[in-house]
Length: 194
Image 1 (spheres, rainbow, N blue to C red):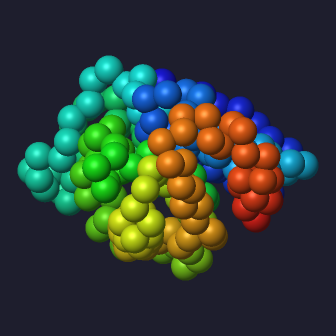
Image 2 (image 1 turned 180 degrees about the vertical axis):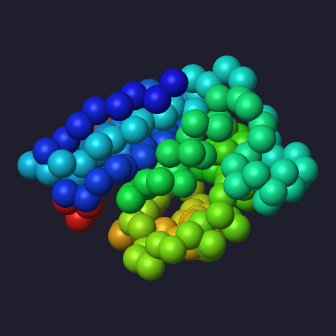
């Protein structure tokens, strides 16, 4: 499921790629952020590719998580939720389809409900760091609206945006791979997690 590796910092960083294409624009930018966060730090990375999950469900709003302290749906999303719960930083990279993040991301997002009360009750005083990455084809206003939505959702989980990346591809599936500047910008943003 997840890939774990150590960098040489900050602590535990959870990285979530929701694109179905491992070399897609959002993944390319996300990898550049991770490269920047690796540096000479002691960061530990847990990387998940949502499109590789085989058994996942959305939230059923059973509210058992409010009794048990954890989501009771035992599927491939559960370890991701547990890692998010204890993460010092979170990087989420998703393409935008039809004005929204893609379906695998929304499956995960619905399950974040299980973490809200648990994080509020936690004695964590400091905010955790969050880097959202959104790639899209044409609508700047909708993409920026999605970024604001990410900020609102993850603020409930005590994450604050270090810096968001909203990257317009104009339908070019190789835009980020061919754009050295966006990879440099992403790498520099990743360094803020050192």
